[in-house]
Image 1: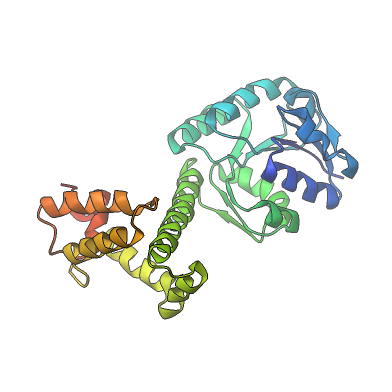
Image 2: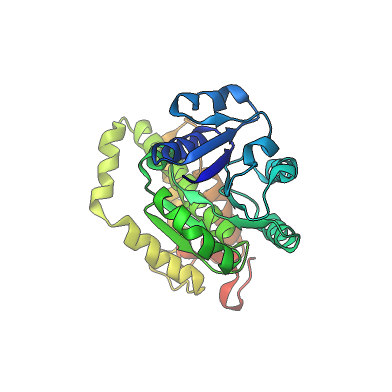
Length: 288
């Protein structure tokens, strides 16, 4: 039986700990608010009073925390109980530069630390599905991959660069958040024209969104703004959208309009609307 610890039992951490307990692992948990951790006790999970107590004798320590500051605080608190062969698997979404510094500092000090952010929700965590991204020392990944495999459908090692998983995690969440905001605006525009939201979603049947993203994304990455949908015309359409929404609040379109206006004022109106990604500065071009 493997003895593992989960520090942080919010929605995701609790679900991961629950799944591990049901797989037969010996699980100890800690959470700043102990009442949250105690909900796992009926599964045979031990609730520890401190981070150091939680990790004592654990071979694997999973962190599922809020941010970099909390990660640093909890690691400092757990180190008195951490065994020399234990590995810290940090699933927290964190700032890339701080992640790189933390990984290098801890591993140089003999603390086995690997950043492993996830694209997993609570339901997926209980089912052992979703994706785990990993970056950092290969030797640590090789020692941990067998333990990570039951937690997700896919475990992808991105290489030794310690901040790369953090970067990809933020990029993925930017997709999720951005698409959610635009989806809210689509439904708001529809509501402004008295179209039921479920009917407005039928527009997704008319084109392949993933193909569009891949195509425009490739153009942005290559700084190829050969026009197929001119920025000036796209800006006119955004005006029509906001007019149709009326006084209803919009999540993304006002910021998009402001960026378009700045680019048009800088002379980019006749280029493809992909020029909105000019700030990427790939191919020698820079934002105006």
